[in-house]
Image (cartoon, rainbow, N blue to C red; front, side, top):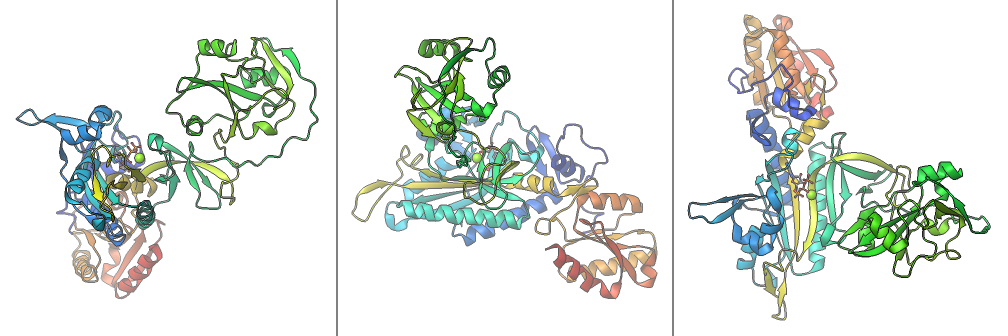
Length: 569
Ligand code: ATP
Ligand code: MG
């Protein structure tokens, strides 16, 4: 493609409202333009990259046995009413009426549409399992659209849905989708982890988010230094790595602690380390009082607590609740002599402590030398705390470190959440009516583009990985007005195309400096510059990523480009 004819509106200035690198660079290099908050056009370069990502997604989905189809973005409200999401989705779902005053939604996702199709068309176990996908525009009226393509209100998603008669079949497809996702994000050249995520109300362990590690990510991930283990910080299990204290129990003692309330104040006042203090917090789990105990240096993980109690809601108790159940305000709460109505649940590290400090359920007082069993009983022990960096990895390999991540994909076992209310059933081998099980699998295609741009850039611009680059080679006629340079450039343009390279040829009558700056900004991996030595048959090759450049006789250009390309693969 001749650059003189290509629509690439580049910008010299950093756009004022773009606050992350990918957004700034995609705007500046002429890949995208904003039409409204969270709504973008893909210009020719952006569209080329999008196309490459879509093709990688397609190839891997097809390989994994999923079939491509296409569903409407405009969806009847009745379907969303059947699943209940018309009422629960909230303002993120874009709603509209047609000329007959019928309600519609713009698809935020397609569980309802696909389930209605399968319910109507599939009646027998013989037709199952099925795995179907589409690559399509989604609409979500996000509260805070931001970071360009990373959180849009209109964006491109690959969404797949699978239908099963047996749990094993769902398990199998889930694993196949996970593998396909790993292949997709590896081919896109991204540094990612498959992260165990919280399934919320649906429950179950089969919910993974694919996260690209990035400083600007909105999620916190705990992963192992030495293995594949990665989990959302809320889900990462803690492996007990402490021994029980060998101290001999000392006599229980009540001491005045005045205004010292939180762990830090009590630790300072009594001159004991936080590891010797039992942190006691009163929660209401579905309205019932639960006293939660963790070691003073640990933090309660409310998701683990909620899952452990099988509660639908856990909230920290108010001052009044504390007075009602423990006869004291928070700050002096502890597990000694609490009423039987209050359940005491302790983190697994608590029973290992000896001669600890805890609140005395009397304002301004704490106990010293508290020992579990002797002084208080625990109704339930579990892993209740947040992991911290340096904890052992749950798989026993390496230690935990934290990183932020951008969610680019999500695989999820839905079970019967949609098929039950929408009555997607089939006849089993015995002619009995059964509800199908479902899985759903999403990839943010446009978000993946931005995540790749976020990961691959320097101070001069974008640096595309080979698999996603809008063009393979950037050929630059350094001075297009010079006849020798122009004619050698034209010759090489034809040669590169015939060798199979998708070549962008900068034939514009611009100054060399402008051409080089634009080339760095656009970020094509290999550059060939035809300059002063054109008359000697010598050109310069530059590698965008390393900045390395060297002179090459035209006769060797083919083999050198091949060599450099292979190095970048
Ligand atoms: P998030 O937590 O980031 O809001 P989500 O959990 O709502 O995402 P899913 O419903 O799982 O997202 O959608 C599947 C995929 O679609 C996500 O993994 C993400 O890559 C992409 N995606 C979701 N919302 C957006 C958005 N507003 N803009 C761009 N991509 C998005
Ligand atoms: Mg998600």
